[in-house]
Length: 272
Image 1 (cartoon, rainbow, N blue to C red):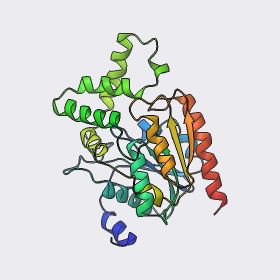
Image 2 (image 1 turned 90 degrees about the vertical axis):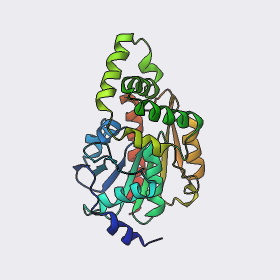
Image 3 (image 1 turned 45 degrees about the vertical axis):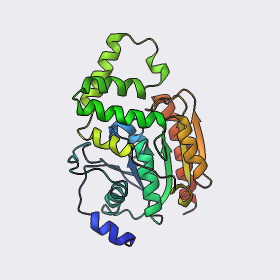
Image 4 (image 1 turned 180 degrees about the horizontal axis):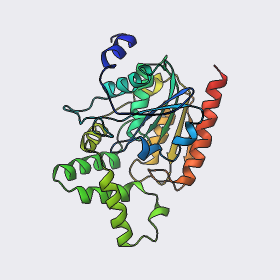
């Protein structure tokens, strides 16, 4: 494999739309399929930016990043995210990955071990479990068929926690699905195509960075067992389970997530 510096030099000019906020040690944000930085991390951006520089590249076809012209490649995506931080003057950083972003974060940690200081992996998976594999195929099928409203409804129902769905009227579901539809990025199909192909099981024993794995136990898109497999495979990883939490964390679950994430970041900072 080419040297780490050569890899970064090769991708440094391949621009992505990058969210940047705050000042201090860098946190590299890896969002999920069909998501974006504000969609996945919006509830905690301001808090984390009080004492960190947040660097959040949008994958091709998300944010203002151009849609990919070829199937997404996990190595390339991980390298491009790392390059986004390095090109902004940050040599080392923690990586916070959500859903598909957990595989990007793990691959970044194994391809660039001297840069990645810590990992926080939320609602993640090493390889698509049967439910996620079916969901990815369904997303691709509905997208190709032009059934965007049906896809938005499925995405909302799959990602919300049970507590968020209780008591909703059909009109409420319609309104929520309309919001999801408006936010779906043009690269959504490409993202879920990558979801169906990624496999970082062989990477897990190679991860050297301290790792926090957060498992939402009410997740119906990525089964909680997938997060447990991440934690079991990464040496000394710490697993935190969030009872009742859905795939997209609600505000009360983000409070717990933030506390554990800050504890990890403080521990890493104290080690220098």
